[in-house]
Length: 272
View 1 (cartoon, rainbow, N blue to C red):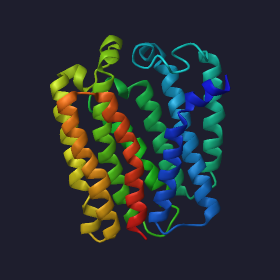
View 2 (cartoon, rainbow, N blue to C red; view 1 turned 90 degrees about the vertical axis):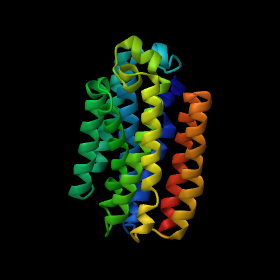
View 3 (cartoon, rainbow, N blue to C red; view 1 turned 90 degrees about the horizontal axis):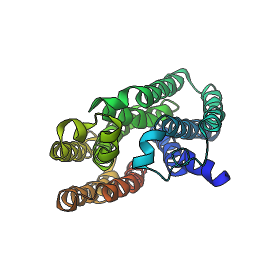
View 4 (cartoon, helix red, strand yellow; view 1 turned 180 degrees about the vertical axis):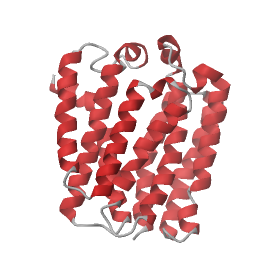
């Protein structure tokens, strides 16, 4: 049962969210360690709550798209999952209360966007992708408002937003069978698989066009540029080619998720 609850929160997503907040703080001039750690834990718990909330509301769809998830396969019932979600959200809000007002506002914005996506926005093509991408990218501003300068976190937010737009488009392709059954109008369901491929490619090209800008405008150094061009843009060029050649959407989505760590590394190196 403990393993089922651990899988429910999707710990990899929560860890990445905590790292995003820390990187945002680092780019802003690195505040006191205790404050940064509090923000990181708050962000990780918020994403963990979002994952649980999503799995509860999506349990019917997940029986087709993700039957291994604990609520979908019946390892955890809905009532216990709801209680567990509050044990994640309440500490997340309590920790956020120790942070500066602007960070609290970002936290509340991310929470509202996520809750709205899980309940309403997921039904609309493009809007659903924008909502998820915005909520994920806000972590950089959540940590960024702890420091002295916001320009670095803002650029990281823009990069993360464009990155998640591309990955979410791929995930929509991955889940289009289950989304079609459940009546959810994602991009490939509403407009066709080929349109989904074209938009995923367009979003990936947008992200790769954004990556050099923090260096060009003098906010991040040459180590950022070298790392992001090789480990992020280089990987995505290969992913787009593979997307069209094999249409293995699950593999592309997984590699894109792992490659987020390379993007975080590039941002950290940019301030060394």
